[in-house]
Amino acid sequence: MSAYYLTHTFDIHGGGMDLIFPHHENEIAQSCAACSGSKVNYWIHNGFVTANDEKMSKSLGNFFTIREVTKLYHPLALRHFLLGTHYRSPVNYSISQIEISSEAVFYIYQTLQDCEESVSSLKEESATNAKVRISPAAQECISKLHKEFEAKLADDLHTPSIINAALQEALRFINSSVNTLKKKQQQQQQLSTVKSLVDLEKQVREVLDVLGLLPSLSYAEVLQQLKDKALKRAGLTEAEIFHAIEERTEARKNKEFSRSDQIRSDLAAKGIALMDMGKETVWRPCVPVQQEQPRVPAQQEKLGAPGEQQNHPRPAEKPQSVVPADKQQ
Image 1 (cartoon, rainbow, N blue to C red):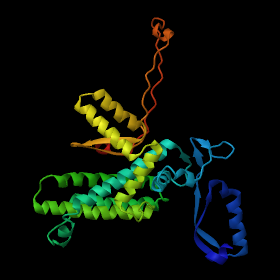
Image 2: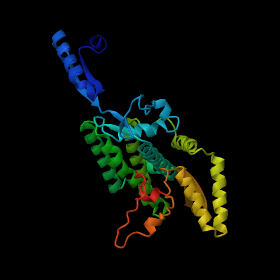
Image 3: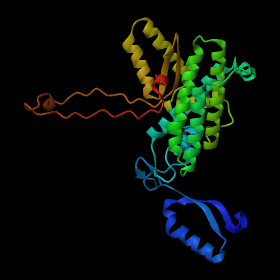
Image 4: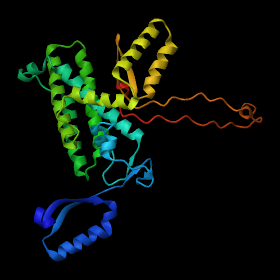
């Protein structure tokens, strides 16, 4: 069957790690016996999928489908999550990890949208002005991203290194350049910054395209879809968030800062971050922040024996965020 559709030699043969022996070894033996010219150029065996460090199975009740996951999370978030683990390693699915990937995808597209908006008024002029040159730092960043991207793909498709290192460095450079563009500059320097951003955005898009993280939608459309998913997970409407923002603004005017902080904390616990930008407050999805519950010590803990060291449980750690500090709330 494979020879009929793919001829006797084809590029990629995939399967799970459990199929290496005896299934695929027998397949090689049978193919070689049937046709001496039959071969596979690349065998790709993927690791198993677990859920919260347990084997995924229907009997354990931790089995789910992609369709079920994408009801609450954007398909790009799921794809980013999968790319964050090397394909030959076990993939441990958990809500905390998919939340981190969802936040990472939002950060990527928010950065690209900020870049697009910042260069829109000068993009054409920077492209037609023959004297405008890309900055050396931007050229180095573009070259490094391109080289590392190719090197990591050649290293057995090591996608985690791409999305967690090379790509992040390029996004940080874009954010830094966008902030530079907001400051007063000489025209030639300003046009150079614009050209640098345009060229770097192009390189980032090429990387995202190969990784399957670049849909045929505008940045704004992707961001809105991510927001819609976050609202669904939080069980809120955007109108309710705007109402909470108004309540918080009023509380701050009245110097009711504990009330203001509580509103912000309650939303953060549901995966909604409020960000104060000048006189305006906007919201974006975030990894839900687990709030510490006040703990009343038992009487014997209060009266612990002299010299006895009391052991108190440590608060749960917040899942690590991939969003740089300057983009967090």
